[in-house]
Length: 563
Image (cartoon, rainbow, N blue to C red; front, side, top):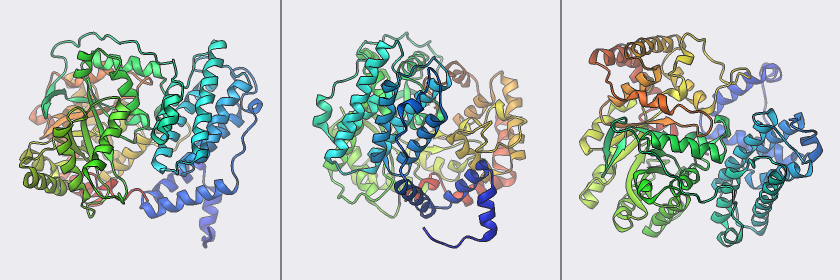
């Protein structure tokens, strides 16, 4: 790709530290889908011109419990392949890595660097399968054979691990790969041997303590005011938990009364994880769980909207979950393309014609104007609003819902399900009295969620102003003997029309279940809320209006983000 580069710019490119280069790239990519498309196309063309080598097994795994530089580089380049829309091409590299474990007779100890990188590879495979699905490849014989080869490698590796007394690390990856094979080639998946790793043992749970969890009404259900958010399963950058660790964490959450989970069609294997767990519970317990997922449309449909088309999309979510969708939240890419009105009309109809598939319908990242438009359209067409919720970002840093969304929700009796309420963990004690983070620091790296919400903080104000907000939250946390995160969540829960806060749940990686429950059983006073509002909104609402002007109304940051 040609083009003139200023000499001094070339000096910068040649000399900037890697962390600065990554930060600069992130700033460029945030300017719009055109730049993002150019970046991905250039990376893809370089990888196609000089494909990564299939590194020899002995170099990937040179000795017991040894993580070689060649192994680190191989994993990094494999990630680059599937992230640059070369997901089909990455299958050979994924299979080679698994085969190399057997060929080199690799072994590792728990939590060692090699063990951690093997776990990351499992997460990479989950992400690669999602990238493959989103690329909608031609269903060729080669694709089928490549997926079957990967599945065969997993089967051989499971046998190897059993004989070597190693815990098989690829249960999640294998399940996601099998699901991909089933999606593209149903007949091939039917004859593929299922892994025995997961088993079919019924899980019996203890009853949650009475009154420990606040509830609200959504449609015809009473639900906890905290949802388990499973976005972190979309990337191994958040940490990687294996199948057993994830199941144990879900048991703890449900036994604590946190029975609702939020996921999406593009959150890695989140639907498979939650669906497998739900289907291993007794029938009565299954009925208590609440599976909220999403159907997200990021580009033109290029097909007519029919009942059959919409029903097929619902059935795909049911297939992944292994059962009913309790709440399907719909996201749409462009308000100028009005098919979203027809789709929502069809979805409401499906809740009546096929309640075994779908119980309720909500929105995701719709703004106030178009939420109102949808409600009026459905009232005109069906005599009822039909939808029950809208999922939006809402925190002391992002109060855009107060610019019109909460009023629309009150008018039509909708509930807000809020994400980003803790700014990816930045609204915690860890960041109080700390300098601003370097978003790509190798010594103290941020995860993708924290990088996202650091951008939001920068839209809202300065790091010094953020520290002042944290200081106020800290004083209130001391007053109520809770954490900063509890105060921030409580502030959101006491806003108009808010039904529940989505709390990111890193299944099998961290365990903050008991801490999460501290948000219940108390309320901020009016004076407390005013003290937080003074920082959140700024003088005369200047910060609220500034964020609104820079980004737009709720969800506008997700419109036109994919080229």
